[in-house]
Length: 177
Image 1 (cartoon, rainbow, N blue to C red):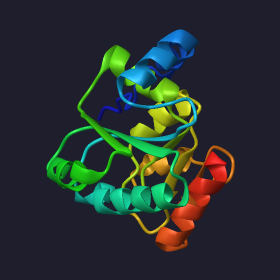
Image 2: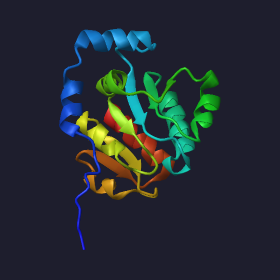
Image 3: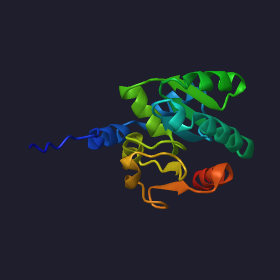
Image 4: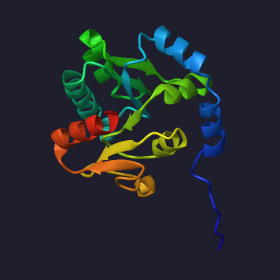
């Protein structure tokens, strides 16, 4: 008997504004503090870490991206049951930085320093963060996706890649270069 409108989102205007307010000096200082240089090409993943997010695919693609471009770096923000995969994988990988769950100012600055947003698996509300930061969102067509995938306009604000790992890596490199 009742219809209720439930907002299933964050305040994207506030988040976007906070990202734009991060100073160049703060960006330079933060990059140095986590071992990044000005020449690094930075991809970001921010979200829950579970099977449908395809964390193994994300890690393998990061490895291939690094092999093709030694300036590539991946920052991962989040927590969940598959966090152990990241911790195990990055033991000898200095091009992947796992920050765990972070919020507020630290989350904002990581979006501010990034060039692209990688999410090969299930697309959810993280797409709003990516777009609020002006980051192209790269995902896979064969992944399970929430309704938020309809915010992505292929070739305009991101890419829905159909060609497996090779296509994903090639798309990411094309954007970064």
